[in-house]
Length: 306
Ligand SMILES: [Zn+2]
Image 1 (cartoon, protein in one colour):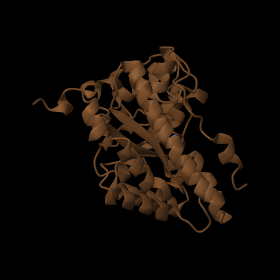
Image 2 (cartoon, helix red, strand yellow):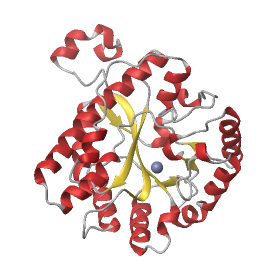
Image 3 (cartoon, rainbow, N blue to C red):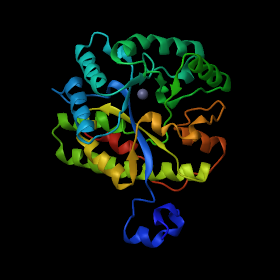
């Protein structure tokens, strides 16, 4: 008998319903973390080093493949806690370039942006055990508001041996970090519980949306790259976020493996304003209508524990 898993999802309805709901959906996904050594505020008495240590311990315990942490080394200046946090991260996980001070390419020239990339390199050289740090994650995912800028930076990256760490899935997890720090400071347990449930429902919604976007753009699902941010809320919610990824049928892989999907060789090659993920950019360029989805709870999070 033909293996039902090899005959494609369309023909395995019976098996899928009865036995293997997650198998058809299995898709590779790499987790990445931005804004190291820290995004957002910390609750009183909590250090960056302790936060990082907790996150690294969860990743190890759950056998998550290497997670790239994208660093802004300006955050290290005069901050021994931040330096300690980054050392802890780099001893366990790879690091990549997120520019020296999180520069917005839309607000600056290509040349200024390139200087920011270089200014971040001494810290990367010091931290990384090998030269595998030649990955750039664009701050704000801004790849250039004009096509000239976009092309200039891309050409520069190529000559310097950098790969672009693209993002296909993003639920703006950073929104929860500072709100969580405020709620812990007020010991507002009810609000903390709301942060947990709203985080997980938003994550679920945007994981599904990203996969639908891929199908609308390419006609099939792709290897995904998830954007997260290392912050105060991360270590408390990460185990449940990992459970959710598993429940959705994702198989965790390294960034190199996820980005070996040929779709990432594509380039929308236009100037875009605040266009979002790689998939959002293509949706805009190809003028594809978004499927219906719930919005992120921006206002509720902003107002929480104030
Ligand atoms: Zn960032």
